[in-house]
Length: 252
Image (cartoon, rainbow, N blue to C red; front, side, top):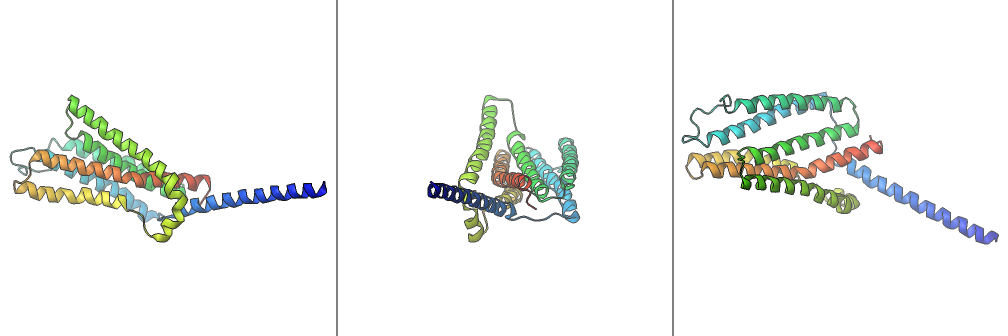
């Protein structure tokens, strides 16, 4: 009887040890994921992020201005961001920049790792959503085709969130150590921003040479903005999940 009890006790201890090892291993992966490409935020970084919102929003206003003036017979005649048709977008951009700056400061005041990561996630989400909205509604007309087309684009955008979340938890997190060891991940956020910035002057030059119409110009801008919005989903999900894990596991 004593031998049987000892064996049972030994089995229980072995099982308990295995569970503890599993928990440690999972925490190790989570910590590796949270610390992946982590950058601390100081006061100069905070100020730079706040100014970045103003710069980004002004860039979006410039793109909208190009789209509006490209519909004219002489596209660059009277070109100005203070045009009556552009001023509402300029005011909206200023208000949104102020709001996002306040949100950034509010999150920053916690001064923890999760708050720094969350700030990045909020930035990526804001940029992605504004690009999505601009790609859908800048030339939106209340017609059956436009309504269906916008619904389709938004549905695909939302679906991409679910697809990447599934990929993150089933493929990426279990192999996070290999990903860190083998090299840098796909820089989706940088590519998205680069595409948005680079496409405008290229198309503008084509438009000046009469190679491209205003309709195609606006369609290409909208397509680029949409691709950028979708690419940023990777950064959004990664940042939000990292912030969540950093908070609940108190990773600093």
